[in-house]
Image 1 (tube, rainbow, N blue to C red):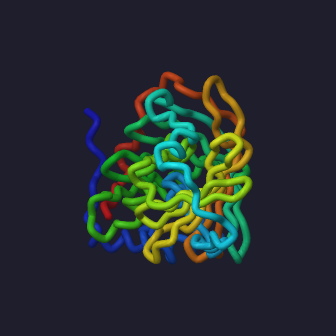
Image 2: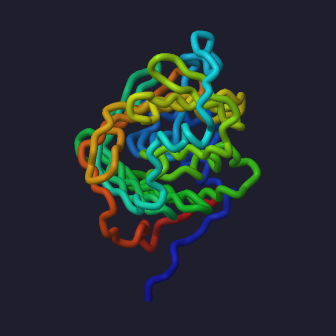
Length: 285
């Protein structure tokens, strides 16, 4: 009979050798090559999968060259494609380039996502599978295949506010950023773009010609990211989705660029789960 994988308490001495820090600064320090390929892959997914990161780059409040718009919040929201009811599942592959001051890493991502969970498999540039991450509404399960251990992170822990806020946005919402008119506080415009200022102080730039989201900038000092940029929108069936997504770290020193190679909308997905070997310990954080 198959036994459940062993669950280790975080006080176990061995966890110090494997734990991936959930603080932002530690996350980006972990991109250093000395952390190993699996750690790089896992850290990248904590950055990419869960919504965005930003840079110190265009100051979020830099709307000095824009004017107040007369368009209403509901009219603006109607311009932005909203696939929340029609885009139910998504799968695909792509290449990710993670860049930081000390260098860069290239990984390949394979992902499948429904509205309730996302499963991502990470391979190194030479094709070695480094690990998997499963995200659902309650937790992250990170499987490090190189070092043979897993970590489970509860998104409800009080000290996981940053990661929890990121993980609340799964892959479907990353590819199709939702714009709720009830959350729009102010709207500005110039000749080419609208900028929606949200209640949480985020700035969403929307192209006037087609209503596509161009970038999302966070202003809060406690935000886990500062900017996501969307490029290369292309039509796939009845959906217009980005083919390039760039995520910047909150301090602007690191970024992750995801280049989509294959994308399938509304496929039938197998169960989104990670099948851990019997002898793999699970460390709870």
